[in-house]
Amino acid sequence: MKVNTQSVNFNANGELMDFIQNRMNKLDTFYDKVIHSDVYLKVENTSTKENKIAEIILHVPKDKFMIKKQCKSFEEAVDSACSSLERKLKKRKEKLRVHA
Image (cartoon, rainbow, N blue to C red; front, side, top):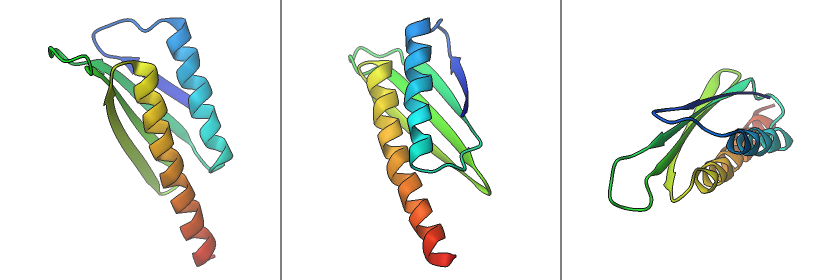
């Protein structure tokens, strides 16, 4: 799957990019018709420790899913967002199976 990653106002290192790519590739096991995804990483200026935001937009035929998670680290945020996307993809696949 093609993953476009953008880090807003900071430079993401290679390890983080590899983690995101590997985690997004696992979504193909749940729904194989994913076209591509856009991942936006942002740091919010707050005094709390949970200031890392990961926003993922997943494009599938005739639809797109958007998940936004805020956590202590980008890895945790991406992992949490991908878990939510897994549930959404399973639900979509089940709907398509019922209507087919």
